[in-house]
Length: 202
Image 1: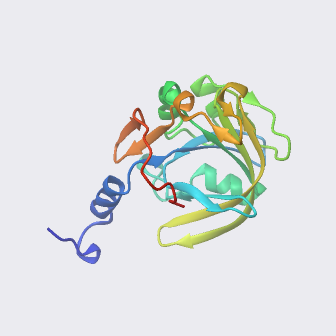
Image 2: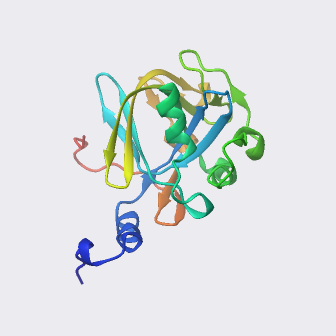
């Protein structure tokens, strides 16, 4: 079979893409509005964008459901303040991740709704999620408009990892981390880790 994206609805093409580009890591993004309201939302269009300086990027789509046609709080907050935190979620936190994906009004604090603990950051104002094993403070580098979405690129200015997730040699204990991934409309946990003969993938 083959599909010409110009001949199909956007949502249908999205389903094909999100079911093919898998598994995807989930950026659990915490931001803060100019008024000080804290926000958390998960994004699976997420990856490392640069080694030096260290940069991360997320793609933020338009509002959905009852908030269709609006700008998501995450994007609005980053635009307004230039700061955000990318928290790495793990499988035991799956219910909390799902809770923060709901369409709450802008004035609602998702930390409260999801029962999460805010932890003060060192170089940015948005709070970190204390329960998350890894938290990366970011300052906005640029926002690139790409079709219906916005690619947010931020420089990582501080990295936090809970002690029992860290291994000697600047490594993360992936067995302990149990990273939560996205497979289309499902979630996944990496259970079997293995090495290939040549470990030269970049």
